[in-house]
Length: 349
Ligand code: NAI
Image 1 (cartoon, rainbow, N blue to C red):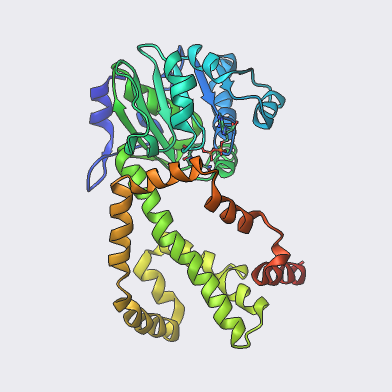
Image 2: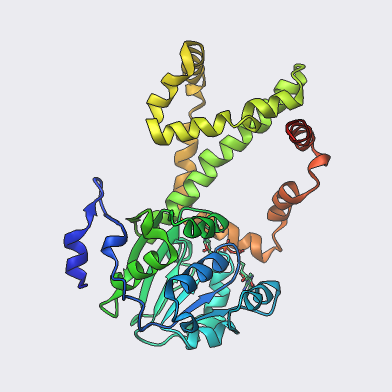
């Protein structure tokens, strides 16, 4: 498949870019390529397992590069040959860099860049480091983006169920002349193209990802915590609060109907009381100028301010991240909301 034939056959996305499915990938795209998966964590493990299944019987053409830690042990237990990161990079034609985003700049300089040679491809699962100038890959190599919109664990399960999962793809640098063939071949082999991939460059992929996490994601979390506190303070049982907000699955159905019915149409299935109440309260909250706050967050992300802040957080030993992790990995029974969830789970068996 030539680069032009990729252009001619894809569906255009109405506001720019292309939409790819399995029919756009050359099933032989990886036939002569040696692959290295660098990092065997949340995404590295499912990607490596999916690639090995798709590449069989050429599974030996896939190695894992990892530091000596429990992730490397897991990769060996899963039957992979595990090399040092430098050795794995040097032995491959296509290198998938699946390390934590804030770790990549350092490892890229020490272990990856010195082992890259012309004609190779490096693949990122997030546009983050490319977008904010945290790494500067050499010329003469392909630079590819394959950024799934799916948590790693689900990426494996959906692959096994033959369902696929969405991703953004782009070619940031095409030195080999076969960059699109490579990225679409990979997208197909990891299972993405059974669902589909939208073309989006690294810059916009990174801005979009951070923007939604840091606005909608942050506010959703804050809304849940605030509603819980206010509701419980007013005498509503904590168990009823968590049931109302997520344990009953009603909210999951709301998000599902956003997808299936459409965002506005989904509201119409809730009956007049919910529709009227939601509408008038939305009007009441409008003066909060969330748009202004969101624009500020996006501007900070786009200026690279967040990326610099996160690198400084790493250099300081992750003081804020540790606080966030303590909340997410601490004993749920130490928080009223966690206790309420535990009671509901017990009640529901
Ligand atoms: P992770 O935190 O699970 O990565 C763990 C891996 O990184 C292990 O192999 C570990 O040995 C290695 N590692 C950690 N610190 C290291 C260091 N200082 N030096 C060398 N190796 C080190 O990372 P995750 O979440 O899998 O993310 C990988 C990439 O995939 C990122 O670019 C992320 O944005 C992207 N991504 C992740 C998704 C997910 O579900 N977690 C979903 C979509 C994209």
